[in-house]
Image (tube, rainbow, N blue to C red; front, top):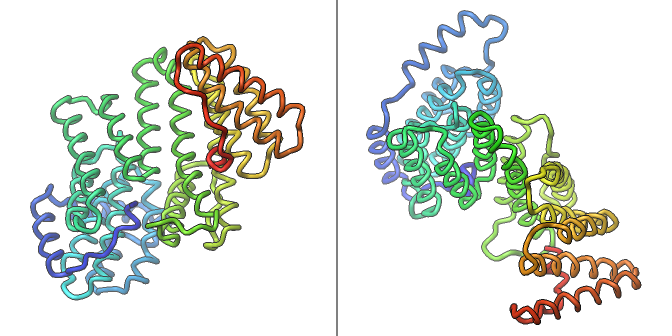
Length: 412
């Protein structure tokens, strides 16, 4: 569940008490100092003043503005302060104002849920825009929100708490904000929580830190880092491709999943030069266009991985590129990807016992496409090679022969 999908608490009064407790118990509020900073900035900005300032947001919340009105203000507020070096301060202050407003809601659970969702959005931005993406006070407030939602989203609370713990360890115990082991753990936690954009941000920071610390180590790891970035997009592509199958997936709210995808696209497009096509509707055609533009980005990362001389699993990058091309009806490109993957794996220094299962996967996919496309001669040649490799694997004492490939399983 992403922050934008936080559900409203069922018992508004109890949630309000929890909010008041957690808010007062956490780090000292930065709102007064940020208000003073904004007042100084506004005197200097003249024509470049924000259309929605922090003061405007506070006034709207004090006047109990409707969720629709606050919702219209937030994108303009975020767009302006995203370009500021002081952005993290303003986003954290906005998160605190929204939390205070949510804590005062005693009867309207729907409005309280809306304010909490907006708070998580700007607090997440406060962390993302912070130097080295470490912001303990904003992260602790996120933990508080998910604690309030504990019965609704226990996994989110657990993950956010673990991320906060790891940040504390980096700053107070290891005293090294660039510690690679902690970065790795945080990335894995974000992927586990399906907060894919946060994972991408931390991978990017991990890459910058490695470049600064050791150029030789970065050259060795560059391909792996690019492959991991592509992997984030691959997980999303696989998930949303299943939604286009027309089958209702158990426990999956299609509308909620679409909103999560649009939230990812909005954040990615705001921070990167390459744009993903946003979802215009909830139909499969609109989703197909969005996913197709995501395929292009994944392909660029896979391509970057294959260009690295130290990356030993180039065949895996070609396999995923082939799978994406196959899913988007480009069988010719898929066959080209598979042929290159097979070639590279054949000449790779990997032990033969490791090569055979990977070769079988590539060849089985190749044989399936050749059969579907009517290239019978090539399909027959591939079948013979598959049989030979299975026999070799049995003769070397490995596990039993691989069963016949399942087309649906390979495609997905």
